[in-house]
Image (tube, rainbow, N blue to C red; front, side):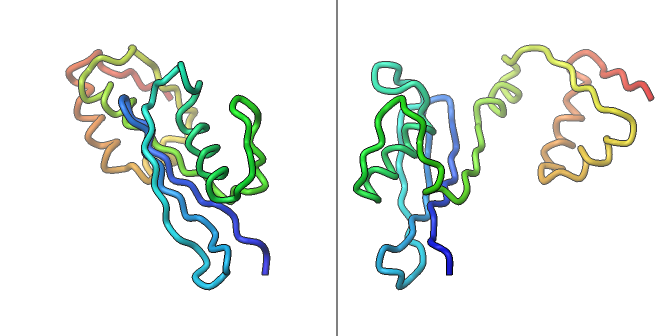
Length: 138
């Protein structure tokens, strides 16, 4: 059996970054145990990037090894990182984001609709009427 590694799920919000981690059980009895952390999303006096800092702190506290601030993190300890953000969602809902264009090549529209956010995509499509109408060329 291979050595278990850390599994991170991170939500980077406008104010806080929330981290959920499945940490490998050192005794090997249960496999993993959960641990959480919350950091300010923006804190330039202490770190450049909240998700990276949270991973660094979590690895330091759970492995007992030092991971220097600002240095690359040894990825051999990490199995996965799932990252989401409410920053983009909030910009869309509050209508304060930058204008943008999404270009999709012919035949790839199916891929867009097949994504895991299909319900969310439909709600965005209905809001296009409040902005400039999208032009679709084939």
